[in-house]
Image 1 (cartoon, rainbow, N blue to C red):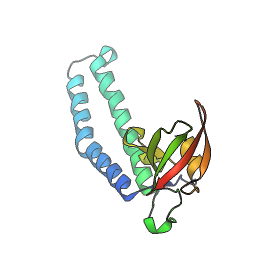
Image 2 (cartoon, helix red, strand yellow; image 1 turned 90 degrees about the vertical axis):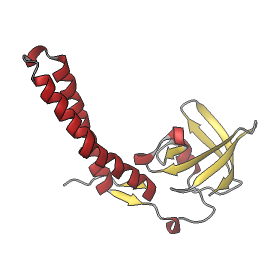
Image 3 (tube, helix red, strand yellow; image 1 turned 90 degrees about the horizontal axis):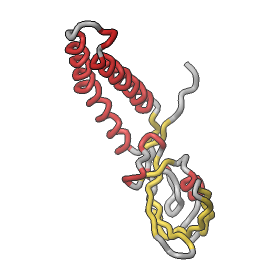
Length: 158
C-alpha cells in the first residue's frame, strides 16, 4: 500500500471519530438501506428521485465510513508528555492578542482530522497554527492569513 497520511489528534478527537464511525455503521447505514428498499418498491428506477437520493446518500455514508476508518487506523495520538511546556505545539491551547488593538483570541491546535473552528480547534496546517507553533509566551508573531497579515503577541499556552 502507498504511504498513508498520518493524522495527528488528541485521544478525545480519536474517540469522537470512533463514535461517529459506530453511528454510521450501526444506524445510518441501515436507515439508508431501508430508504433504498422503500424507493425500489415505487417501481421504475429510471425516474425515481427517492431512489436516486437514497443511492447518493449511501455513497456519501460509505465514503465517510472509509475516510473515518483510514483516519482512525492512521491516528497518531498527541501525548502531553511529548510536548514542551510553554511552547506552542499540537494539543496546546494558545491565547494571543492582536496588535495593536488587543482583541484576544484562543485556539487549541489539533490535527486536521479534528479541527473545528466553531469549537476553537484549529488545524496544525492552518496559517495561524503554522505561524504560532514553536513560539513561547511573549513572542510577537506575524500571521499570514487570507485576509491579510496580522501581528499577534502570545499571552498564554496551556
